[in-house]
Length: 383
Picture 1 (cartoon, rainbow, N blue to C red):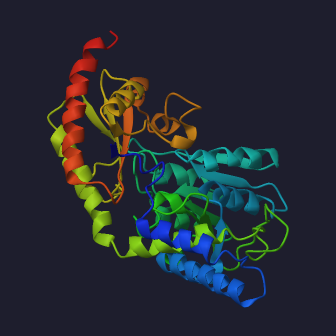
Picture 2 (cartoon, helix red, strand yellow; picture 1 turned 90 degrees about the horizontal axis):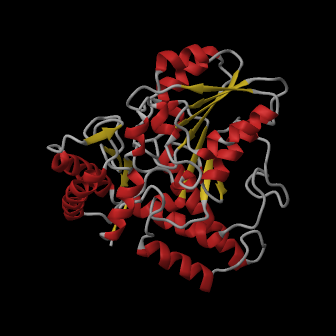
Picture 3 (cartoon, one colour; picture 1 turned 60 degrees about the vertical axis):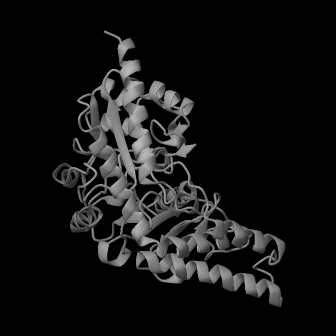
């Protein structure tokens, strides 16, 4: 099997599995307890805070552990909305993940306005159009760091500066689920107040993530109880998952060259398909600076993405047609439609997303099978 759906989830590092196994077998104590063995678990949790904070230009006490990206996004968006005393507007990018795009609909029900920030044909924020939609009443701007469908890297720093020029008190939230440790982030330097990460996107465990909240940012908690995580996210610590996240962060940090090797694989795959005039790249081209190293969206004229995905699975290659979180809800990607792609081109898209276990040889095999399958499937295209 060749696994190329790493934006949906990644295979955990062996070190992650070993760290979690040790925690469940030996250091299974509740980190909130007062005796010695529990305090040692609390120290390990603190080590994870430091590891995450070091990657995003934050301090350890600003790291709030969550169950993953969706909870982190919800805490950021709803948490800000619940602190506001008057109706405001919330600006979100048109290509946001459902964890943000659906959550802002709750904000509307609270009496606030939602403004959708447009993107250009490459899936990058249209800054001029965005500026026109921002105002002194904009309370929150939420923008993906990296598109989960096209790999487009958004101009976070410029968007944050633009929003603060309109309202110095605005909060800037970045969904970093697809960007964390694959694209640089420094929250203070880039003007980011809230940053969401998820463990299972970086070869860590499922069920754990973090929302990094800069000092001075007020949030209303969505889970109350024992007061853990600065009373922003109560509940018994998922210490095995947090220990696993720490192991994943450490290994990712030691393999920077492997992260960049994924870009070389993207470029190589596109070069292999360059002579096929029915193949189109959706989003920035792989070698461009605003293209993330690990996500590639391709459309194939005359072949539906769903059909091609299923055909590739029959050949032992796993890809997707878009976001795993929305795959059962819609047939045509809302993100690709926001980019202005025709219905046929959006319908013919598949997403190839790479992880640290993929190889250049797998790109060779994928290209061969794509060309062969498309030669067959295009014979049956609707006219």
